Amino acid sequence: MKNNKKKYIITILTCITIAIFFSSGLKQKQPIEQLNIISAIGEDIDIKGDIVKYITLFSVYLFEPQEKIESRVINSTATTFGQTRQTRQLIDDKESILGSEKVVVESEESVLYGIRNMIDILFRNPYLNDTAYIVVCKDKASNMLEMNIKGYPSSGDFIEGLIKNSKYYNFFSDNYKVIDLFFAVDSEGRNLVLPYLEIKNKGIEITGMVLFKKDKMVTKISIDDSKTMNMIKENNVRGIITIQKNAKEYINYYATSKRKISCTKKDDKYKFTINIDLKGDIIENSLYKNLQGSPEKDDEFKRDMAKKIKKECDDFITKMKSQYKVDCLDLGQVAAAKYGRQKGVDWNSIICNSEIEVNVKVNVQKTGRGDF
Image (cartoon, rainbow, N blue to C red; front, side, top):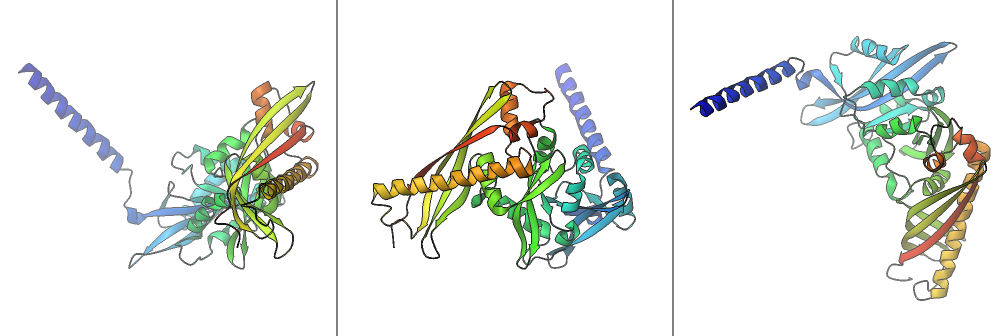
């Protein structure tokens, strides 16, 4: 009897505790009709002399009759990011909640000025979607977020798909999320790289990548240089590589790139050896006749492709050292892991004065049904 009475009391107390927990939580909640569901966040900046104004943009869904979903952009301006919440609520009749946003769009001007303050307010917000993609756009972020794209309720939904699927044919990775931003900006031996978007005649396009040093943009590189950089920097990425003689004679190779990096140090001089291993399929060929049936032609293709890729990698590394002057390959992270961290060294300077050797190996897995 005592045991049954004890179980009964525990059950009652448990029920009371659960009821108090849920009722206290509901007091802070709002009906869904009174909330802004955010699809994308944007940031612009207005600099006039010593006066800097931050412009925060929220692209929010509008739920119309007959299950139609559209969006609108709420624009708020203030001298600090935190104050933009105040100014936004003066013009908006709903409370905005984070957690559903798909992308964060930064204008080129804002990342040239520096994104430290933006990172700080995002990191402190526990409701932020850390897996949202972050990109840099030419001109103003407001122009991109206000675009109407057929078949999408907001441009943020389109941009999410654009970045998410960029990994299939251009050697892009999937490491362009807000959480990657937190890790890359202040990690020793690493620098942030982000996709660069522009508004073209056909709509929004990825036209290259942005290189950072700490929290500031250094430069924008072309899509071709971006592909080469990603082949050297990233592991297990996919893309198409072409050898072309003329308009009618060329070959397309769809490959997965894997790379290994080794680092040695002699005195104060570092040497890096990057081995790139490509495995893939021939998806189009009008250049190497009888490639499938001739081992000699197969070897010739492998040599030519390896030579082409090595030259592109060497040319990019030369640009990195002489023009960009930033370790966008994260080689400093490799060196720091092997020879010690927290030594107060400038890895950008060290890497740009180090010997970097690239070796390329090409393997063909499939050639398709043969030549046509």
